[in-house]
Length: 90
Image 1 (cartoon, one colour):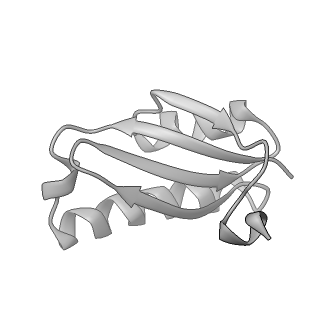
Image 2 (cartoon, rainbow, N blue to C red):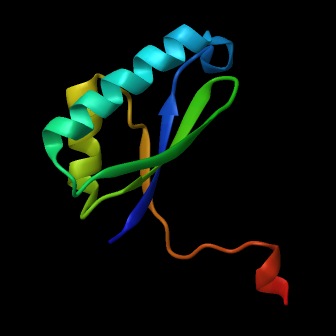
C-alpha cells in the first residue's frame, strides 16, 4: 500500500504543549477509527511551524479526507517513492 508524507503548515507547531499534541492526536485517531483500517498514521515530526506526517493509505484522496474530517491542514501530500537510509550506501 502507498505511503504518504503530509506537510501541515501550523504556525507555532513547535510550541504546542503536550496536552495540545495529545488532543490533536486523539482527534486524528478518532477520525482514523471511523474511516476504517485501510488508512494508518505511522508517525509525525513536529517542527517550528509545520508538522510532517507519515501515513499509509490506498490513495491520496483518503489522506485528504482524513485531513478534512479532522480539521487539519494538508498543504502538501506526497507519495513516497522509496526509502533510503545509511544502509543504502553499503
